Length: 497
Ligand code: HEM
Image (cartoon, rainbow, N blue to C red; front, top):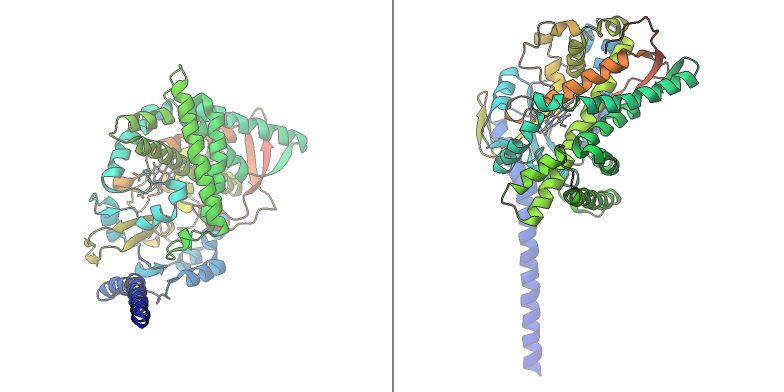
């Protein structure tokens, strides 16, 4: 009996010892991942004279960023674009061109030094790509579609999707843009009539409906009402994801069954099923439509995918096109109308010089705030050694208001700057290089048609209720919306189209 007890005791000791070793191993690997590796990367940058605010464990610099955001709220561009030649706004945002900071344990090198930016954005090596934390953190929203994938998977998707966005194809979508705009015109006409000739309208929601309606038509053709169900769920999912954009990078957060994570997982499942249902119905239909969904379907079928991979490819790329094309154009048209409402002279000229006005809007309010990359190997840009694993961020608003390029009145709304086209490589609302926006032609045509139709039917001024507060969520958007006074143009005012 005693021998048995002794043996049992030994087994217990051995087991406890094994558990202890396992526990210590986990702690050591966590310590390496959360402390040693980030510190090693920062040390390599520090040796090259690049420093930044000291990070805290798990959060990095997230707390400081939130505090700074609350205090500043990207106010500068607003004030002077609306008012006048305010030189102080430009001076206020002159910051260091290269420094490092941390989101959680992700190390980010902020770069706005022009020569380095040029090297990064035009680099075609597959060793440089979209940051891994993006596809991990935005998984429910984007899956492994074109926006966040890298290497061969990305180039395969880019090859399939790119031809659908050539100008010839975009021209074929112009009737869809008109159909979506007409719904907006009818709704605003109704409101102006009801409110006695001039309506005070918060335009953001309407611009989103326009953009969502158009992208649903472009993706799903005549079945666009199905597209709209998917779109509404994607919107809800996007809202959840944009609220946690700064907690991205905090290790482990995305696995916790928090309320917002559970909601996101549920929506992800529903969207997945809705898209596949639309695809199944499509296959049963006799009529053949050449919309974006069809092209994604054919792309998946011509690849050597298993059924599960095919489904994932279709779902992810559908979601990516919605994501890339919906909010960007909606928010760009919202900002464009706000700028025209506060610059009446340009509102008159715009009917002749629309392209310049849109370019200037995208300079001052680039919807995508950051162009980001991750170095998958050690790389060198502008003489800086970038260790493998470091993320690179270029803030577009900083490039777009760089005083050396844009002059002392960089924040002033002045479309005239683009009278000879855009001559600087620092202007990049659509990015540049191999990952340049696929939808650039489509977006410009969409914005021009929408603006032309709106401006030829209505005149706009800022409502006294408008509270200017651009804010950075997934895109740069007006925190409290854009409220405009909208009036019908008299019949003898020019009609563009
Ligand atoms: C004003 C509207 C838009 C703006 C400002 C914009 C801006 C951008 C930017 C900055 C990028 C990333 C570039 C980089 O990382 O270097 C991008 C990527 C992309 N955009 Fe757009 N975009 C707009 C509209 C659209 C539309 C309408 C579509 C399609 C329906 C679209 C499809 C894409 C796709 C597929 C990518 C990923 C390309 C890749 O990674 O290879 N975009 N866009």
